[in-house]
Image (cartoon, rainbow, N blue to C red; front, side):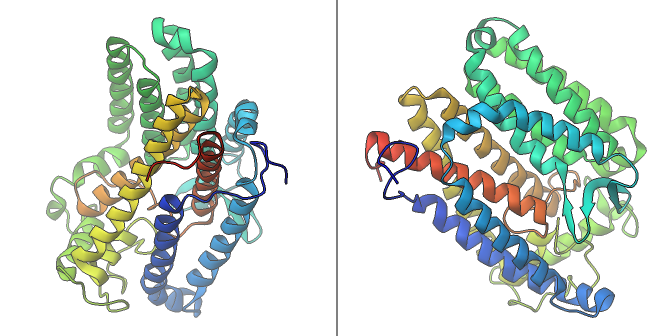
Length: 381
């Protein structure tokens, strides 16, 4: 390879990103295996079914990361619009019977034999890439005119409608909040941002209370013991897992709640099983790893802003917001602090699409760090 920005002899790996990610992936695989052995044995007579599937997803994600990490960042600025269009098309296709695959009453997956794709995961990444380019192209409009806000929100609203039809309220909240955060970090005027924030809040609130199903999920967390065998059952079992874990946990593989007490223990409520088996110490380690990762991501965004590469800055900020919002919501749901939503814990919960696209964002972030080091030397430690 040559020595320009697009291709160099030595790739500068960012260990502040790599070490937390590798640790989270390994720890997630261990806890997922523990959480899923019972249910896999009961329903499929194959105790390592979910482990083997997740390992395939993980290895595929590593391969994808190796490919993406060598793609120049400027490429993503060029294809942002295409990614957005692809996201919209897939979100439409998933709603078509025969193409979309229904699981637990939701049409969120497109099935290809043994392989399934969740379009909402592509939509999260596609919206961030598109918005980063939009904020650069329409900088003055965003800074000085309300129309600069309104145009991207029309697109976000369209995506939100398609997600809510599935339904996937959790992904909708993440995408809307990420876009609002990117617009705010782009320097939008406070009063305009507050108006847009209020508008988005009213819209999401209206959508939430318009459906008895969503309303029940949004209010049950306030008092799950009022319906201990119905809507509050899952949260109560999650809280029991946290209580059993204590400070040091009951040990890997010794969880009781994973034995058919806690539904979705290997997906949305994996953090509760981690808390039971590794205790508060394990929770602190995992949240600490995510903190190191996100701080590093925003530091890269700050460096990009200083060197006046606004696309990279907004792209990095968007991915950082995407990751931290999903972590906050997932952990908050497991702890009963937030209403129950179907969001996986990034890099740890079971799910191929989530793993693939989260690792793809990490690959882009590694490329960003590499290009910054090429232009400005080594980052300050």
